[in-house]
Amino acid sequence: MLPRPSPLARHLLAAALARTGDDMAGPALLLLALGVTGGPARASGLFGALLLSAALGGPVLGVLLDRARRPGLVLAAALAGYAAGLALLLLGLGRAPYPLLLAIAFLTGLLGPALSGGWTSQVPALVAPAALPRAAALDALGFTVASLLGPALAGLCASLAGAPVSVAAAVTLVLLAAPAALRLPALTTPRPSSRPLAQLRDGVSALRATRPLARATVVSTVSCAGDGVFVTCMPLLGARLLGGAAHGTSLLALSAASALAAGAVLARRPTALPPDAVLGASVVVLAAAHLLATVPSPWALLAAVLLTGAGEGPQLTALLAIRHRDAPARLRGQVFTTGASLKITARAVGAALAGTLAAHSLTAALLTGASLNLLAGAAFYALRPLTAAARP
Image (cartoon, rainbow, N blue to C red):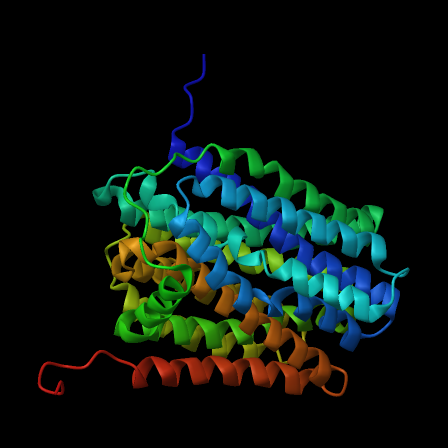
């Protein structure tokens, strides 16, 4: 008889399922919308609307998770709502007016942070404090596995059965994770006694006033905007250099494989390198990757994709380690979901910007992605912790 998986293993597996569905949904919707609307601007606009509202939904979801005696119920409800929104987009594309589809995508995106920060914020409830660094590194690997499988499955399903089947598969994966969310333990520690609005302000203050959290949030958010540019350009690069848009989307799986390899190295020794230093180095790697993608060669594109993963994997591992280290326990859910929502929204801004730029110049769009990562590097330096002598 096989041993029963630990609560952490079940949690990380379910999180990977939900995130795979989420990472599959974006490329699948891009491919479907490209086929229906016939242009990158509208397709990327729909993708951007799905992500843009996360900045509003993340803080509210975080407050609900921090105040709930059964946070798993909040998480499961968010998953169900997100899946329902994706299903409505699938049914409406090509039938409903485009402004209505944008509104549905915007409302669906309010729940998006539950699939990222919502799962991660619950990891400390499942392990002892001494095991948290390794658990956080394994959680980061789950993100990477999802980013590996999601685009690959999106491209494979779109190639074999069409983009609508790809979106439907994403909906199914998100729903499969809901039962595990319901099994999260009830919390026995006292819930915050402050009013929700006061707690919302406290969470924002924690992100702003705790310097390592503030720096990690700014750097990862700006860098994620560059990622939105790169992901949106991939179908167009695939069409130009590889013979089809779906091939470009599938190539993102190689980026995730590279990120998985880099993340696995860090997971073996999660405390070997300071996470803050890893975060700063990652944006330089990503800027170089986006510059390499401007070279009009399939081999240069392949190298750029692999280099992108080598930057993204360690960046995520470092970011989660910093948040677990510095987030106040009573605001942990809000710190994680707000941070996730800012990244998701930044990715949406990058995607929308890339759609507009790529319609005129794909090279200009890629250069914008590189510039955003260089800007993130400048922010990392500017927001470095004050030394004792520099403090007032």
